[in-house]
Image (tube, rainbow, N blue to C red; front, top):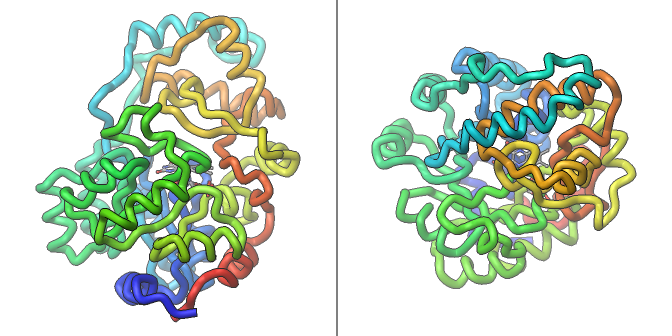
Length: 353
Ligand SMILES: Cc1cc2nc3c(=O)[nH]c(=O)nc-3n(C[C@H](O)[C@H](O)[C@H](O)COP(=O)(O)O)c2cc1C
């Protein structure tokens, strides 16, 4: 199978097949990134909440495992920081649950901190990363210029045509189109959450008509036929998250792997109650209970902070009803196969170079 846009993108990225692993904070690992890269695709690390030293360690470990290219994803810091006042209310609403799980009843907000974005970027530049992806927005001009002058290729993400155009204006080299079926956080940044609920086939058709940049299709990709359809629809490459999330090389907890195995087409929902950003996750009792109690999210990053030790306790006490499990709508694509096998299946629907 030949495809000009795919061929050009693969040559620029130094890969054999137009397949890219999705960034998955807390789930992506050097072993997973390296396994995807060794299979001919582009592996991905997630810088997200990592301190610069941790980014260095992950990059060095990945380089030890493969000499093929891989990418690092960065979270563009949010403009809206959420509400501390609401966070205190949510923490109060969760105090009985915290007690039941053996946690301190109240949340200590004074210990809240996040890695510094500029220091993360410095680390990525110093490490000479050749493909840098960004989620939740585009790089500001100064950062984009520094990345480009370091020779990096920038992958921007978008959930609507408008956002794809913003990424083009921010000088992204290729655009990841995230359809509504995708697992994990909704990556919108300009469009509101409601507007950004566009399914992949519609988003791809719109962007293919209007945006002359390589497009990467994300959302529900886990089979050769889904990959073939995306390429036929104008994508230069495909990206998969859910299909790799439970691979043995990932950092997903066993509890998540077991729950995913029982997933069906109606198993997921979009909620902002677990991290503060709308995200597609497995439908769980905790979210249903918070909704019934009328608890509203305090926004990102506070909500994620409040939930962090509840999630750790959920793993310790084997409570799938409390665990945040980011997962896409295409439930049939969850698999616990080694990443190379999953990539091997998907590549049957892709051109190779
Ligand atoms: C377990 C999991 C964690 C994710 N975490 C992130 C993340 O931290 N940052 C991000 O930009 N996207 C994240 N995503 C979304 C992916 O980037 C991608 O859009 C999505 O996986 C594509 O849809 P699919 O899951 O149907 O393959 C995550 C997805 C999953 C499944």
